[in-house]
Length: 204
Image (cartoon, rainbow, N blue to C red; front, side, top):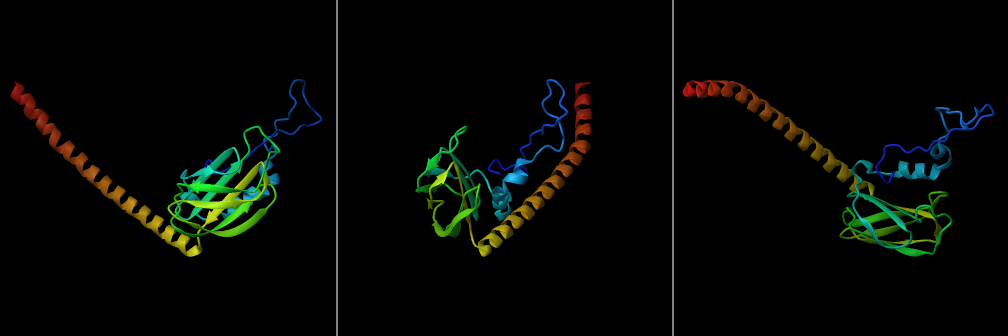
């Protein structure tokens, strides 16, 4: 999710009673999708995203709990994931404050949801973002914590309208450029051969 992948899946090959020597797995192509069965809260977070196509790697955790910090943000939404270090497990963190800086969020009021990726949403509060900066109070947690910031529906609708207008303008400019390039290509084909012929005659 935080790498902007369209799909996340973890598979293992289940063991069977009929195992060949040296081949401990049966290579079942169906495998076992851990995320489908065990990561229901992560799926819920995914489904709650409002502006995923516009989320970019913009923003950072200036201070706060955790060893690893991942941030995605757009003009109306941000997703922050905080975790213990790679390879670490059962690391407890006390209640703290997450200082987010450099976010793409426009100024305004946002709903901040604090989520335990294993269990559930822990709390929801209203926060104010200004100049891409906001501080979010975090509860005590173990290993992982997610923070989802989202603007109101009106702001999201306006952002989508701006995005649609930008896409239309880009498509129009692309079409116009294609026409110009086509005309330029025709001119090159029509003008270049006579010029080359004249240069050849002059050399003779």
